Amino acid sequence: MSETLDRYDRLILKTLQEDGRISNQQLADQVGLSTAACWRRVKALDERGILKKHTTLISPEAMGYDLCVLIMVTLIRHQQDHTKEFEAAVKACPEVLQCYAVTGDADYVLRVIIPNMAAYDTFLNENIFTLPGVNQVKSNFALREVKYETAIPVDTV
Image (tube, rainbow, N blue to C red):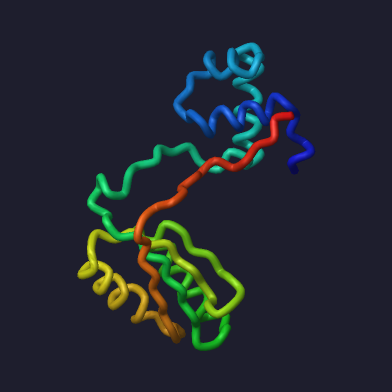
């Protein structure tokens, strides 16, 4: 898909990742297009699914989420029912910001934000331990954030 993106598309993507609230006029000026041409390109990028979501990033701590936990979950067996049920349950938990099916010692890695240790205990007992097929849960607590990026590298050359 990347070869179908020309220089203007890449500049648009890079600029939107830096400032998603930029006006179409400002975006057009920055990338060197007319406002109409810029709008058409942004719309096409959106329709093609290249732009996944338009959102605002919020500080978790500002909302009272002081703990970030990386949870490794291992299922008993790789049964389709357990996998589907686990994935559906995780998707329904707003505390789970990311969930990846992975290779290695665990079957899934989750990134969870939670207010405190008591809330984490409740989260585990009500949302994870109750799921059939969960065999093992290992938790790693983030001590500090070293790097947090949401921008995908875009080569504009």
